Image (cartoon, rainbow, N blue to C red; front, side, top):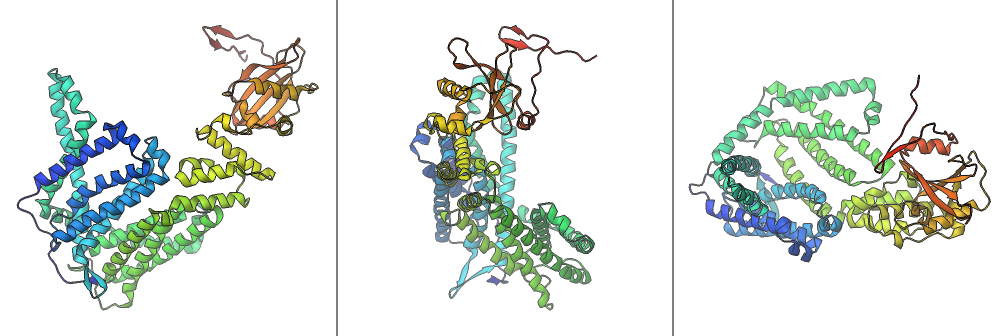
Length: 597
C-alpha cells in the first residue's frame, strides 16, 4: 500500500504558466458571471441538475489544472485524465445535488451547495494526489507516502495563499479605483465593480497567484516545515491532557459526559486534534524522529487513551441515533467516527512492532483513511447513500410509529432541509387519514406546505360543517354559548376572504378555540375565535347582528403569545374593562393605561 522509496516531489518551474493560468481564470470568471449574474435566460433554460453540474465543471477544471501542475513523474496523459475525470465525477455528483435541492437552485438559495462545495473540495484535494502518485505492482496499487505528503501539503498551502493574494490584489485594486473616484470618474469605477468585471478579475488573479506560488514552491516547503515544527510541540500536551481526562473519568464515570448530549462531538474533535498533531510530528516519515526516545515511548502508550475516546464517541452517537433516529448531521458524524476509528486503531498498531520507527503505521493508516474517505464521500454525495434520503426515511418512520408526537416533529426539516426527498415525504404525510393521529399529522403537514408556499390555500380540502363542529374546541367562558352560535360562526368563516388567517380553521391547518363572553359591554354574548399557532395566535371577535342574526367579524386581538394561549386553555381568562379609551391619529392608535399609585 505504502512505499518508502524516495522520489522527487517538488520542483520549481523557471517559466511559470502565467498566460495559461491567467486565461483559465479569466474564462472561469466569465462563466461564473454568466451562471450567477450575467444571464437570467441561461438560468431559466438550465434545469437545476444541469446548473449545478455545469457549475461544478467550471470550478473543477481550472483547479484540477492548477493542482496537477509540476508534479514530478506525472505524465501529460495522466494529468489530462485526472482533469477530465475530476470534472466528470463532480458533474455527476453536482447533477444529483441539483436534482435533490431543485427548489434551492430555482430560488437561488445556495446554502445547500456551499455545504456540498466543502465536501467536493475535500474530495478533490484528496483524490488528486492519490491519482497522481499511484503506481501498480501487478494488481496492487502502491503509493510513495513522501510523494503524497509533499503534493497534498503543496496544494493545500498554495490554494490558501493564492486566496490571500487574491484578496490583497483586490485591496490594492480597490485603493486605485478609489483614487480614480476622487477625480470624478465614478461611472468608470462603478462599472469596474460590476459582476462582469469582478468575477473574471478575481479568478484571473487567483490563477496568476497560483502560477506565482509554483515559481516559488521551495518557499512553500519552508513555510510547511516551519508551521509543522511549531505545531508538533502540542502533541505531548494533548496526550497528557488525555491521561488526566481518563484518570478523572475513573472518579466521575461517563454519565456527566453523556448528559451533555455532545459527547460524540467533544470526543471526535479531540481525536481530530490528536491525529493532526501526530502528523505534524511524523510529517513524511523521512527525517529524524522528534522528541526524546523516552518521551516517544510514553506518548505511544498514551495513544491508547484515544481508543477509549473513540469507543465513547461511538457509544454516544449510537445512543443519539437510537433515541432520535438518523439525521443528516448524524450520518456525517458517523463517517467522521469511522475515520476516527481507522486513525486511532491504525496508529495504535505501531505499538506491536516496537523495533520499527516511532509511529511507523502512520503512512499506511493515512493512505487507507484517505481511500476510505473518498469512497464514502462519493457514495454519500450520490443517490446510493444520500444523507437526505436516509434521514427523511428514518424520521418519517419514527413519526408513523408514534415515537415522536406530531406537534414535536420537525416538518420544517422535511420541506427546507431535505430537498426533494423531504418534499415528497411531506406530500405523502399531508394525505394521511384513517385515525386521529394520522389526521393530526396530515393537518400539520398541510400547514407547513401552505406556510411555505408549496400548496395554495385554495387547493386544500375544506371541512364540512359537521367536521368543523367536531373540531372546534369550546372553552368555558364567563357567558353561556348562545344557541346556534357555533353554526353561525362557521357560516361567517366561509364568507371571509380566503387570505385571512381564520381560514385555517376550515382547512384544518390550525387548531381553533372558541370562547363566549360579553366583550364590549352591550349585554350580548360575543364569540372570541382563537387560531392557535402554538407559539403565537390570531384572535378574532365575532358579534351577532341584531337584525340579520348573522355573525360577523368586528374586532381582532393583538400581542397573542404562547403564555396567553396556555392560560386560555387552562381557564384563567377573565374580561377586564378598560377605563380609558384609545386615541387614533391618522390610523395609528395610542392605548392609554392607568398609572399605579
